Length: 390
Image (cartoon, rainbow, N blue to C red):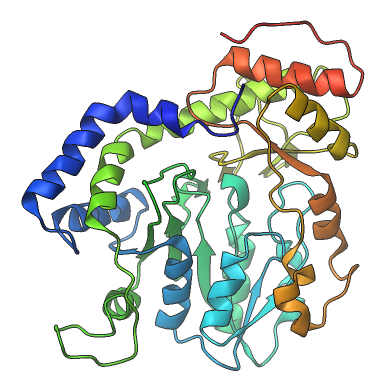
């Protein structure tokens, strides 16, 4: 079997260091906002190119607190994408604001930034781009529109830690960036966890207060906040893993290059594209990388008109796979009050019907990727050599 993501293999390779880190936390018995949380905040802030970071309970909480910290509230509108996980719009709804969708780019799956300006109204307070699957949204356009209209920008970086736009880490470009440490993320803990990074001292101070019941001093509460603190045990685990993140991200790109090279030999699969200054490309290891968006491949997601057949064949071959995401948010029951109908965002709807994510994790071997590709080619009738998984 080839899993979609092999977390057991990652733990096995780091088990001694992780176990020691967890035992040290237990011995110190400092479980809430302890030294590992503080240290990780500093390490992640530096990595993301920001002076400030706040560890919180989840990536969803990071989004919620970012919007709240920027003053987004009831009656406001936030422009975002319908092709993402529901946490993006949950956070908008939790502050009482309304999500306003734009369609997506058919090749990168990120929001079509050319549509943002047409959706701005007097109620618009913020833009919330999602760096989907590990590839940065076009932040040049997002920031230009935001600055001209006086809008805040919250970057959803849940799948994109380590990705960059024109050399700048995602999360450092807008007013706040939101990370998720969900176990399957490129940097994942052993449960839920998240972090907000920001260049703005005022946003940092407000979010840091909001995450611990709205008070700067214990038992002195200034505003209604919530209990959303990154757990000390999770922070200790993340600090061990964080040391390996650069190599893991490089391994993901190398795995993507291998997929691209093997799938380019023919077939009915459309490979992921990266946006470059000269157009869209399917990057390979020997291709000059002039992409302003350095993708970290949280997912390797292809498109096909024969997804159901492919899924059935992959199941039979015990090859992991997933559909992220089968129903765009504008068609979800939770957002039926927004009045969108099928056809409102045709590209997002088309991608939702055609996308398929294949096994992607840092430890995946070339032999495993070859078996995945062979299974795909068998499904659509191309000749594929039989190979054994190493």
